[in-house]
Image (cartoon, rainbow, N blue to C red; front, top):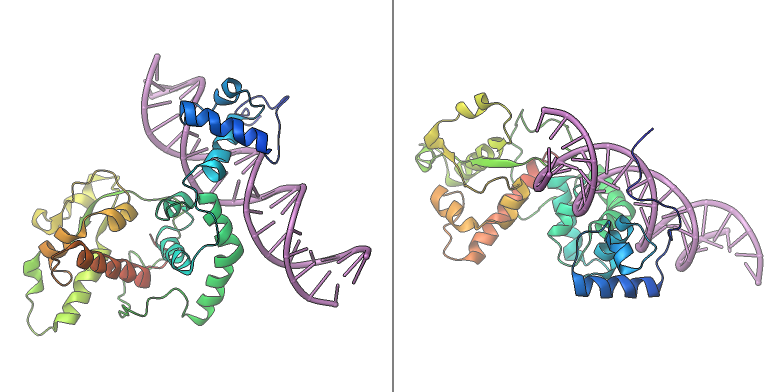
Length: 261
DNA sequence: AACAGACTCAACCGCCTGGGG
DNA sequence: CCCCCAGGCGGTTGAGTCTGT
């Protein structure tokens, strides 16, 4: 019945790690490096399960772990990322250097979860005030479906610049429209080729980034070319303005599509 | 000072995924 | 394909600590 345990639990230590065990594990990994967790305890002389060793190292012993309280900046970032990614703690932790997924998960469960719940009641918490944009209806993304798994994407759709030259529209209105279209047309990992065919070739910008996650694309990629090629924001001459634009875009996603990514 | 309840967070559990054979 | 294994992940647990009475 059920899955067999990752290792024999007989004769193994459980519960809190002692300083001695920490020292053995740290020294072993310093010399031999991470990986091969299952065999590590035996080779290092630890009476622990391999998984336990891995967890202890990743969440506590790693030299780059940041100790201390979560700052307000980090807190805001966590909230925004959670808004975009849901309970994808490892992804969120990847954006917070020195923080672990376990730490962020605990912090969320004990602090932010409640805060956000309270905030939602008043509709003011975790909403960008710097980039207020009116809600644009979107049947595809306005559902209340909460994704619990990351969805990979290989393509992100932006309208061709020529589409921007519509008469009788202010620049701001147009910018909103373009942003809305961009969000609406994020092409989630397509399981059938049919949906993909619906897109006209000249309307599709393939970032050629492979199977990176939407979050990675939004947060990591060089946004400069995207901004300049697609006229979504003010022209970028450097990474700083591109970064500002990227944050605007994230704010936009955050504002319009709470929990839908 | 003593107790109970609330809170925190390290550790564990079991499932999922991807790679190799 | 299928199976196995290692590693990774999110949810849950429970011991220790804090706080209020």
